[in-house]
Length: 272
Image 1 (cartoon, rainbow, N blue to C red):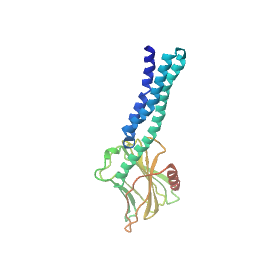
Image 2: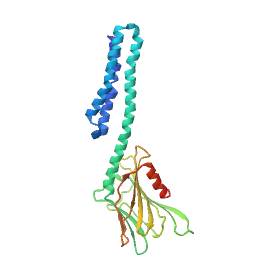
Image 3: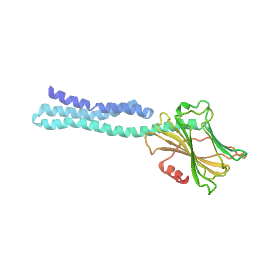
Image 4: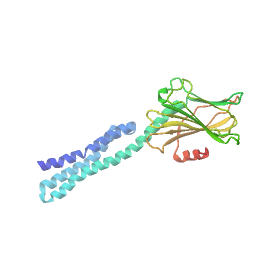
């Protein structure tokens, strides 16, 4: 009886990781991986373990001289069960992170598609960049707002310079995330960068890396969303501002998935 208990306990424990894996898989993949599929998978892997249990009991009850072989047979199912569950769980976590990233990017697409980015010229030749969020924009997401301007002066005598303005933890006023001007409208190498940190659920940041002035009526915008799950996962968005005869240029940008090659090529094109 004691031997029977010693055999059954580890064999039953061998079923635990498969049950947990089935439940986690069902919860992680939700619509794509239902509870029925998870339970079926658990039962599928539990079936060989039950066969080994019966075989181990048969070895011990009918052939005492083969006790060592029976014990080895008894130990294998828990090892295979727990080891296999860890491997499958590791495989399951990777697409889960990608799924979360995709969901976050869709959420940001809904928000960013309504953000108005406006670049305009004044009579004095000042170019300003504004971000005008919708009324229901969740400002609690903005833990820190940092604006960085990197450019080379159009006057070679002044040389290159970098100017940074930070708002710290202060929340921007409704209707305006930032307001910044540059004093040279014809600076073809102007660089703008807005970095919004502390977005719950992303573990990373969404940033407008660059706007490159091509001419007085066209700009390019590169937005990058970095997830907190895989550092090499990026969501990029190259977009051109629409032309407007009055000198006003408005763009609503969205996020789209891009692989590392596209991101690297965009970075190379922008001279980063």
